[in-house]
Amino acid sequence: MMDVVSLYIVWFVAGVVVGSFLNVCILRIPRGQSVVRPGSSCPQCRQPVRWFDNVPLVNFIWLKARCRWCGSRLSWRYPLVEGLNGLGYLAVAGTFGFGMVAVVYALFVSVLLTVMMIDFDHLIIPDVISLPGMVIGFVASTFIVPVGWRSSLIGIVLGGGLLWGLAILSPYLFGKEGLGGGDIKCLAMIGAFLGWPNVLLTLFLASFAGAVVGVSLMACRRLELGQYLPFGPFLAAGAVVSLFCHRDIFRLYADMFR
Image (cartoon, rainbow, N blue to C red; front, side, top):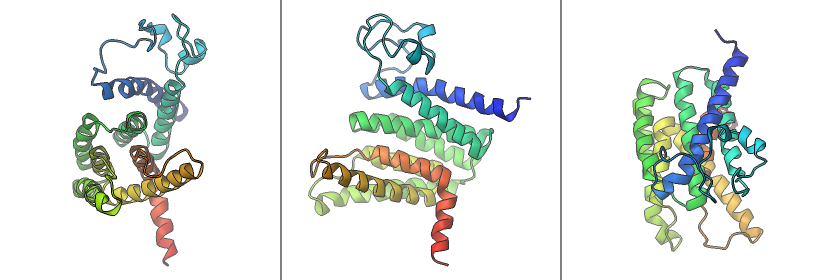
């Protein structure tokens, strides 16, 4: 049997490798392209990336952040996504161990990272991610992770219902549409994985962080009043915090009222 350190190394490497695949998903899913074929290629010259130039993290350093064929610069987003996913897998293993529960939550972290990047780039959260995610989250909560089907189902309804209600009211409260259908389905998917208490925590954290960032950007004149700020990255970040820190946050909240 492997020792604990070796297990952590395996999980980090697995996270980095999956992160490389996430880069493909982030690039191709919004375009309606297959994430399987064709293989990776340079965005500029379209030359195929050879297997020895496609090693996650290492290839970026080895090639000095440039394409082997045309010399165009490679985006820093590639190693960022790979590294973040690897660190996310380490955090999952450190919190939930190395069993099936950890596998489910590692998948969840990867989905959230993909949602975050796609919404940041394109202001959309594709249904091809959220809808299957709801089903997978519900099944996993029923049979694998300690959430339970009732809490998962309520999380789906509550998460989607709260944002759907806010989307309906936004034109009357703010004079414009405030949320898209992608945000609604994304929070419903988060509820499927985390259950209803954590979906409320996720929404609170996302709203608070979004308000702080939005006001800060307006103060710096980087965001105009009324300009749309993608909410998906805040939902994803709030879900990650809820996943790892919900017990501490709920305990702190309870201590405040003792």
